[in-house]
Length: 180
Image 1 (tube, rainbow, N blue to C red):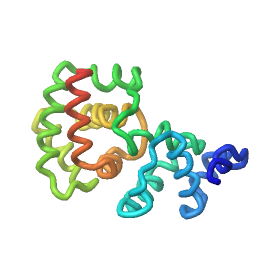
Image 2 (image 1 turned 90 degrees about the horizontal axis):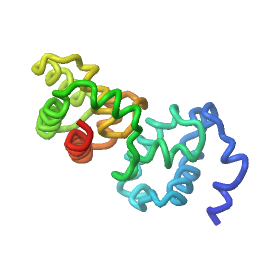
Image 3 (image 1 turned 180 degrees about the vertical axis):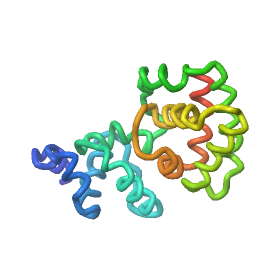
Image 4 (image 1 turned 90 degrees about the vertical axis):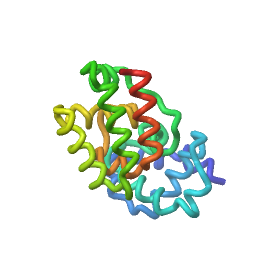
């Protein structure tokens, strides 16, 4: 069955270049098996959420080195239960004592955005930062860490659109409460 795929040395040895160049149709079954073994697979990714699943794999694969990374680095896309990198939290969420309020304001603004596209998310971040008199970078870095637990990753606005408004708003509020 599927088990042999993810223990296959060739599959595990796929390097970053191969992951990013590989035909998406060829890559998806490997990602599926990796997510299944990590308990992150959802059958809707084969059906009504297939387009979403493919777009997320496309978005994150250029930044990953191994298949296992889809279940670790990629975890925030597939689960609300993911770790927060302590260095990222220190650097991005504890930088400014007003960040808790700033993030709450941004979450409020995000709630009104429809449709929640990357362009709309970017415009909202820029407008809110201007209103608050802070750099967009302060909010961008804090939001990235709040939403993914990480300090780096794909372009923030594409990432937010991929994760979706409801999860983004919920995560920003929870992280602001927890870390700021």
